[in-house]
Image 1 (cartoon, protein in one colour):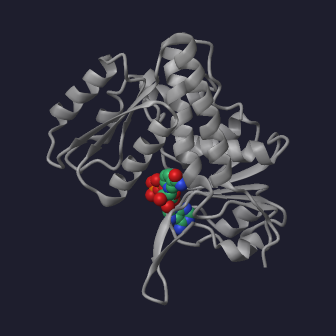
Image 2 (image 1 turned 135 degrees about the vertical axis):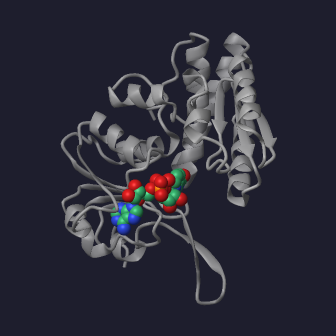
Length: 298
Ligand code: NAD
């Protein structure tokens, strides 16, 4: 039985994309500038190919330019770094995203930190990590940003709430915790070594699950009325020999206890790409010294 309010990330993402498209249109009309996003894909990982295609399509639908660079899996680090240097120098490119994971012979940190910080629309460059960590204006990683926008939309204020983020990755867990801290939550980061995870989660008004383990978070871990944001995307086999996508949260049991919950699919996933578009617009405005588009004001 579902009692929780469903936080509809698909619908919210459509609103964000619409607002971005309107701003892009204004930018073109008033300044003759079209934001451009370059996506670099190395190798042929099927999931990455799907993401890159989807990003390109939505970029164009928002009225922005999309530049796709597909490189062989064997591409050398020097060739990849040269490409990033040329994108850094290209005035038609305002956002650069290198699709992760990279093939193992490439140094992910080296590659990401080669991107000009102002074009780092994924927010993974150490300069942006440092800016976010010190509460300064930065490029904010898309998935946690999408989670924050949904939480802000749902709650009048996040101030003073107990938030538990499960997962400490650089891509989701850590920046998520930082954003919640910046919004004055009391934040706990739980991870694979956390002792008695259910007990830690039971104290949370807000739970963000970013683990990568199908349906791990159970209903009896959830404080009644808490808000549950499920970042996980896991493909599992079903009894009829097919597969389906599930989150890190056991939806049925958690929805029976939570006050609000994001579904998988249709929750965090669509917000991630919408935030990528918002970040590209933000980067374009900042690079051109145009009155800032505020991606956090939805
Ligand atoms: P990751 O593998 O880098 O990190 C997983 C984290 O979970 C680690 O910090 C680890 O300590 C923690 N963990 C592992 N087992 C645990 C356990 N038993 N108890 C508590 N913590 C445990 O993963 P990630 O990149 O942060 O992604 C997490 C999930 O989010 C994955 O399912 C991924 O597919 C999904 N994801 C979704 C989006 C989106 O757009 N919706 C974006 C990025 C990642």
